Figure: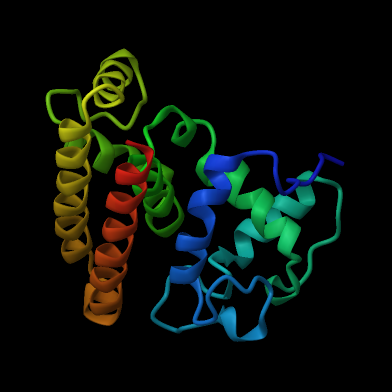
Length: 197
């Protein structure tokens, strides 16, 4: 069985994880609390615990030779491992502080492909193809040496994310919460970028 994520292995990931977990459940930073379980009939993801949906959890356990079980029983170290392996890696570590949170939170809430599309739209001047290629890598590299450009990229990321949220059919059910989440994460992203600078 593949190893579970161990606390202390990735400081940048652990810096971003609490902000996204806070958005994924009503009990901030409290993994595996039963109040973080939801099964909203309007949510296409279905049964969800700490942002992990049942189908995803089933696939993850089967891939490790484990029996499936109710997602509400997911263990905290399983949550951290799924978040790091499926949503943080491989691209978030390539981004400067603040922008890494933008991409990570979007990957969790909207999927990895949508996250990359929104990142590319925010960067501007790169192909919007959902692939972290040379153009995207070069644009990100420039942000690592230009704090003002990084600030603008974070601001643009949230402009395109808001537009994306409002374009979704589910916005009538979840739009208000998504826009609040967007604002919360944007503020945290700016704070992380400022601290790193």
